[in-house]
Length: 89
Image 1 (spheres, rainbow, N blue to C red):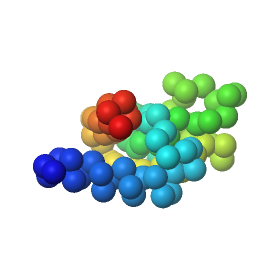
Image 2: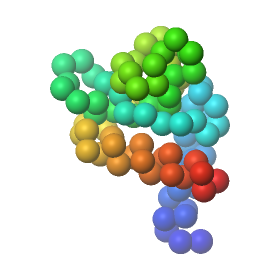
Image 3: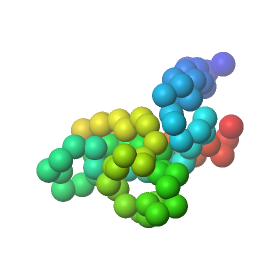
């Protein structure tokens, strides 16, 4: 198993534990801290049908975890990686 495969497996296992949105959620960028101009966090897409999936806000209806990554570019990248891994698993 490659280093990348090992890292993916470990991340998938960790994310499956705290994720209240299911074991393999669709991910989105989100505003995890107040005052940012761009979404600098990541979170599962909210399962509430009244929460627009394109809304980057985090409400009490949203699934955990909400992870602050400190950068809009990194948040975009991590969401792309996590969602690409969904289809590979």
